[in-house]
Image (cartoon, rainbow, N blue to C red):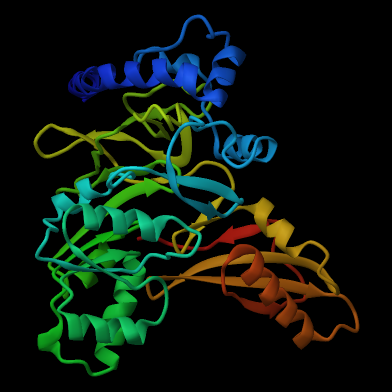
Amino acid sequence: MTEPLQQVLDAYADALAPALATTLRRAATAVPAFAVRLAEAGLADDVPTTPDDLPKLPVLTKDDVLDRQLADPPFGGLIDPAAVIHRIFQSPGPLYEPQLAGMDPWRWGQALVALDVGPADRVINCFGYHLSPAGAMLDEGCLALGATVIPAGIGSADLQARAIADLGVSAYVGLPSYLKALVDRYDELGLPATSWKVGKALVTAEPLPDSLRMLLQKRVAAVRMAYGTAEAGLIAYEVDPGAGLVPADGVLIQVCDLDDGRPLVEGEGEVVVTLLRPEYPLVRFGTGDLSAWTLGPRGDLRLAGVLGRVGQAVKVRGLFLHPRQAQAAMAGVAHVRAWQLVVDRVAHRDELRCLVVLAPDSDADQVRAEVAERVRAGLRFGCAVETVAALPDEAVIKDLRDWS
């Protein structure tokens, strides 16, 4: 498959080359951190302007972005100082992400168009609106298409289920696991089956295994997967269920070798993106997600979905959880000799537990309460806290989930 895939990849790169050249030339003079990266790579007088030139720049990691923001708050010089910013969000890290001016600045409308969302739809948005950008991202995408949005956010499943029944909600955006929980709660409340009008759903931020997709499609006819990040917005999305993800407009995607950052044609690598927006280009940004290129049913270019993660961070309920964050949250907890966070999957929903080994003569109830509060405040996750005699290993975060 190498030759046809290479041809399709070449055509993809050629189509984006003019926008990429414009973005990089403008960013070289307007975006301070990009100018620094060029100088560090010896490219100050030879700015990359083509997809083939991009690998001359090292991949920009999430940790690189965090370090730059710490050194030069709030955005680490990655944004044109003249850019118009409407909102500032905070993701775990903490990382600060801007909402730039313009309609649908994260480009999620493309994925919603593919789902046939439009002015006739009432969309319940079950992503968070507090600090994290996901709620606003999907909100902007829906509004750009003329749809009506119910800003449900996270939690309050009883109220959300009743709103679905009362308002004739026709579409859902949110986690796939939360859609299942919402369907279950709707039925538990005894709400009228005839009032369930949700016929389409765009889900993202966690895997959608075939087993869960089949369950959801018993109640929602069209369930489509999309892929994006807080920094980059929409990256790719489904048009055919289970047949890979179409690259989104407005972003150049490369799948890169983990060792040298070289773009790959075949095989698994890190998803590395460049935003085609000069005031916030995020050139060669490594998402930390693993994927591979494939061809769709019509011979078109697709990403094979998210196949795993680079490094130690894991995604739980749509948010990243990094060992460094966990260690900061748990630092100095009295009467705890050792601890470990455990992520598991129960009934298609992520569950987080914290195992703790207590010091002698500790008040177990008091320690459990303090640990639960530390995790909630520092990591934004509720978790069960269990006392154990010893830990099975030294991992800070242990992921037990099976996505089959």
